[in-house]
Structure formats: structure tokens, C-alpha cells
Image 1 (cartoon, rainbow, N blue to C red):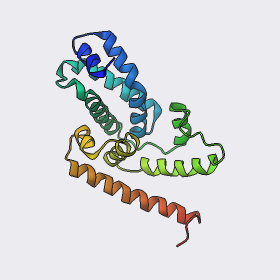
Image 2: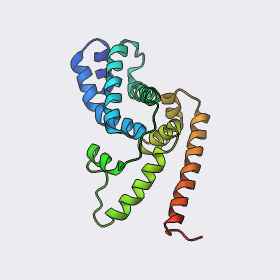
Image 3: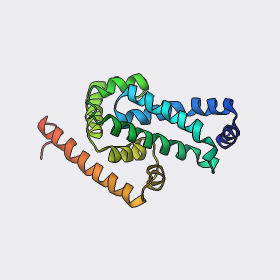
Image 4: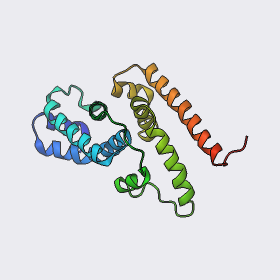
Length: 189
């Protein structure tokens, strides 16, 4: 069934439509929440709170065709509030293992597994060290393949702000990753 019709049914208090919407979006939201929070348990809480808010605010949806953007915006803001409320830095643990628990097929290369895992782990650790709003912009742009205009809508900011966040994040990631490669002797200048 088309998403727009499901959303319209949900707005009209059809709980089966709400359940279908939750099932269709839960995995994507869980992955996004995890990438923002860095903690699987926190991401489950964020997604749960997001769906509670969807239920409570379903009558405020004016454009059902943009529901997915509205949903991601809501989840992103809930994640930001959640992280701010916790007021703690998430330890950078073995993110790869936890990602594999969320999406087992994420890293399936056997031949280059060890090297690829190390490089991916370095990248995820570097992304986790970004400020939360830069991290969110990177996740939405590269992992969700959203455009800067859509990210601006989701984040509630101007498109120029998104571009600035992406530029700053890329610069910081480039510095961190090139520094890590230099210390491990993988790059020669």
C-alpha cells in the first residue's frame, strides 16, 4: 500500500495503519538513531519515543506525502534532546560489532574483512567524535543519501548551515583519518 494512503489512514485513527508504518520504518530509524547516539540501547529508546510522538502528533500532519521527512526530523530532534539530557559522551567501543548486531549483512567481505573492518572502524570512530549536528548531517547525507535541502528541512536549519556542517565534518574527518594513517605508517608523504 502506498505510504501516503497509510499516513492518511493513521491520521484518521486507524491503528493498523500506524502499526504498518512502524514496521516499515523501524529498521531505518533504529539504524539512524544508532549512528547518531552510538549506543544500541539508547537508539531503541529514541525510536520508541519517536513512535510515541508520531501517535500523539499524528493529527498535526498536513502533508502525508512528506511523512518520511517529518518522521526523520522528529527522530533526529528526539535523539539530540536525548543525548543532551544524558549529558555524557558516549564511549567509542567496538562500533562494528554493534552495527553487525543491528544489520548483519553490513560488512560481508571475507577476503578483505580484517583490513576493511579496521578502516571502517576508524571511520565510524571518527564520525562518532564529530559534534552531534555535524554527525547527523554526515549520516543523513552519506548513509541516507539525502540532499542538503532535505537535510535542512529535517534539521530545521538553512541549507547553507547544512553545507557548512558537512564541510566542517569532512575537514575534521580528513584531518583525523589522515593523522591515523600517518601514525600507523599506511601513508607516506
